[in-house]
Amino acid sequence: MRRKSVKVVLTALLIASTLPVLEAAATEREILVSVLDQKKQPVAELAPADLLVREDSMAREVLRVRKATSPVTIALLIDDSAAASSAVSDMRLGLVAFLDALDPRTEVALITFGERASVLVDYTRDRGRLKKGVLRVFSRRGSGAYFLDAISDASRGLEKRAPERPAIVSIMTEGVEFSNLTYQSVLRRLYASGAQFHALVLGAQVQANPSQDEIRNRNIVLDEGTRGTGGRRDQLLSSIAIGQALKELAAELEHQWIVTYSRPESLIPPGRVQVEAKRPGLTVRARTRIEPGKVTQ
Image 1 (tube, rainbow, N blue to C red):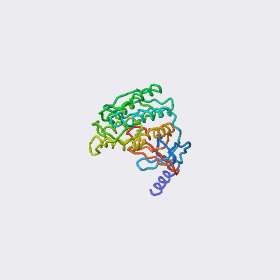
Image 2: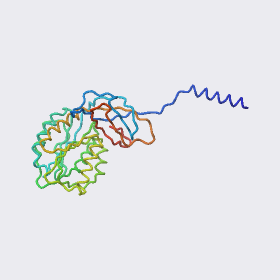
Image 3: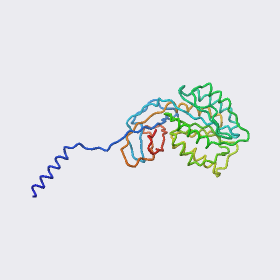
Image 4: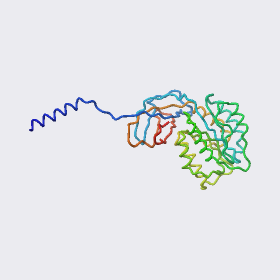
């Protein structure tokens, strides 16, 4: 009996040694990233070895990087409340330069949010229409901003349109906020749209009370919304800086990268992704929030 059992064990070991080794299945994921050099200019060359991708602190293999070539679709949110009155002229100049710097295929919508969120010009590639819309931007006397309403509405609209590379760009002041939406509802809508959120924030002459719920909700959206979607938040000291900040943003939007990495199959999908630069001197911005059931980008 002992010889027979030994023979069975040896046979089983022999069979096992001839079977192929089964590796854990993996899927490929893509994420859109902005990569800037020390001069805040988009990099011209990028390799997989230049980046490190982590999901919930677990390193992932970077397989490929390629330039993002599909056109961007931008919801351009403009503060025309009373707090922006002294900045309107510089806003117009900066917006015209921004439109000129974008790829002609880029669709843009102009949305103002002083007094209420309103579509000034719907999504179009027609630069003439958009520039005429910019010239119709005036501050509304005695009005406050409805920024949270505007970003929620823009996010909902982009989610329905489902463009390949959605973005929301806001030019705003830190004046009074009248929207009563919570930051949780706005961020939920923003993340669902898949859009990157970029904010150019100008200090107002009359600072709003940060302890007010409306201001607190706005500040959280500005902070978490930009970081969580791979966008940027520029705090501007003067309206004169709007033009340069918009030119830098246009260059960033038009020179982004798509990073393909490998993710092992898992019953519990990751909730966070982090992309870091391994090459010295680079700044990387990428979406950190992964929505359930969705590809990262």
